[in-house]
Length: 289
Image 1 (cartoon, helix red, strand yellow):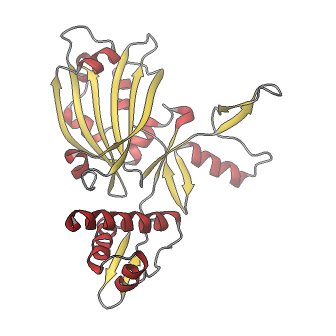
Image 2 (tube, one colour; image 1 turned 180 degrees about the vertical axis):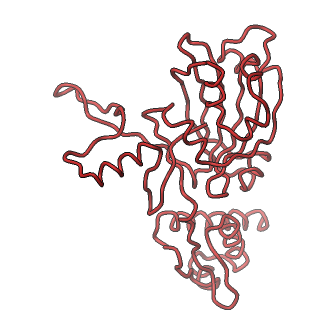
């Protein structure tokens, strides 16, 4: 029984320390209390504390220095991604160009029934299926599985998908993308996504399912994306609308503008509108596929 309980205790200490690091309560460069002090604070053995520190070190949140102790690692060099939900298709191509990609698989298959239905495919119609991992500053943050109707997938090659954003390839074929529907949820990492995202199996992930349509309503892309929550977040600007007594929050179209902008302000705004938004002292990137 004890052997089963100890990993749970280690996980609990890991999560407590991780939350403090992510929240900034333990800033970069800060030295953590020693193993004896942490063991006494949480009423566990030093072995349990060591396991918790191992998890933090594996995630890149702390750095152990022999003879000096354990220090909070500065992770700000890895720029977090911020997805703008108020304008789902905006900047998708630009964002694809701003990140690196690894193409893990590419082929033509019979789609699952749910995907065939969401794309409005005819019976027997195949899809081009691909699995990609996107990276920012060399670190993986998303695991993308896409299904595109076969007739559209044939307009680009495997090599092109490995080098160019999918939306750019779709629009190059002459297809105009007009709207998208998407759902956001949470899930746990299976073996393949965990390995691709450099996580443990069972780690929490954000999941997004998006279907992109052309002006006629025909589905042209089905995307299932898994994101590391420490490197990706969703953002939406809201405004108050309606009459008194019936006022409510509604998504803002575009980012709010500050009055009387200087030329410098305008330059910063143009930069943000191009897909960059500062966060925690570093720049962040909006959603792309």
